[in-house]
Length: 161
Ligand SMILES: CC(C)(COP(=O)(O)OP(=O)(O)OC[C@H]1O[C@@H](n2cnc3c(N)ncnc32)[C@H](O)[C@@H]1OP(=O)(O)O)[C@@H](O)C(=O)NCCC(=O)NCCS
Image (cartoon, rainbow, N blue to C red; front, side, top):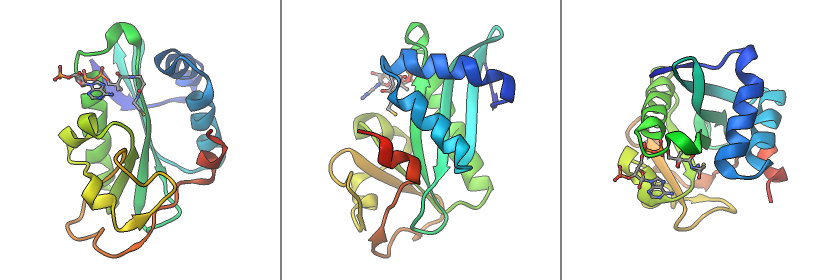
């Protein structure tokens, strides 16, 4: 399996993959809006035998400064449970760290994301409409999330129901 940055010619297949993974169009539309707004920092695909089987996006958050939002991550239903989602998350975190991003927030099942270091406690000082047991964060630079503040996702998230 190869993990690489998305290219223009992947976009249609990625849209279909996200739609299929979530069983609804909302997340694929979110991804399109984030691209349109130029808020995407990391966008990777996982490719097996020439077929795109996974996708992940990290987008710029409005605040705190130098924070990214992880969403969505999608793996084709026929390829789930084989480590593809984990490989995408680990690679995306590494790329963000390499580019000196300070932290990443995530909204999702922390039973899954805690494996990669995301914790509810790390996100707690930050107010967000998503705050609670499904809202976590990871510091890429130690101590970067120790102040209080607002964790505001990019504008495209406001269209999500
Ligand atoms: C969530 C998702 C990206 C995981 O990808 P994946 O390639 O199947 O995940 P991996 O193979 O790396 O990891 C599988 C492990 O995660 C666990 N896991 C998967 N989804 C989970 C969830 N929502 N909560 C807790 N654990 C979960 C599996 O039980 C498995 O555990 P194990 O390794 O102990 O057996 C994939 O299932 C998916 O696309 N789901 C639909 C879209 C979605 O919900 N995305 C996440 C929200 S943005």
